[in-house]
Amino acid sequence: MVDKIGIDFHGVISAAPDLFAKFCHEIRKKGVAVYIISGGPKRDIVHFLSEHKVEYDEVWAILDFYEKQGKVEFFDDGSFKVDTKLWNEAKAKYCAEQNILFHIDDSSVYGRYFVTPYCKYDICHGACELNGLKIDFNDAGRAAQDVAEYIRQHAIV
Image 1 (tube, one colour):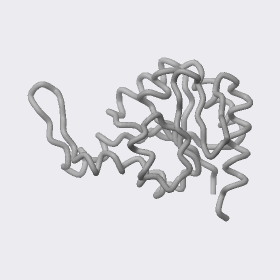
Image 2: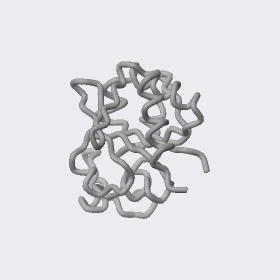
Image 3: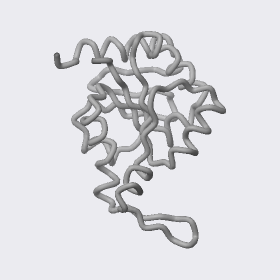
């Protein structure tokens, strides 16, 4: 099994694309797959990642996932609606199903649904914290080392 991490797009990568371009490059060099997990739409995220040279292995978007299932209501003004509970638990379910071992996100709401270790990202400091472990993305090499070490120490074999 390949080690995998999840990173939120809106509020994490979108807030600091240069930081996460460096981090994603460094963590992938360590053999860890990067899954970008966000609300969507996927095509907009892929375009942004390409523009900012953010390396990744997969992009998964809640909107696209539920649209394929017919669970999205679209409105004339371009807005949409998905059941709140479905939306809020979607990332957590995806991470569990995909065996993602570490997820970085800025949302306090989504975190309560996760069984995957959930590192709450602080935009102001460019860091996240999980059970006393602080990951500072301002030093991409060190952050990649810390995350890779964490997932290898805590992985269930």
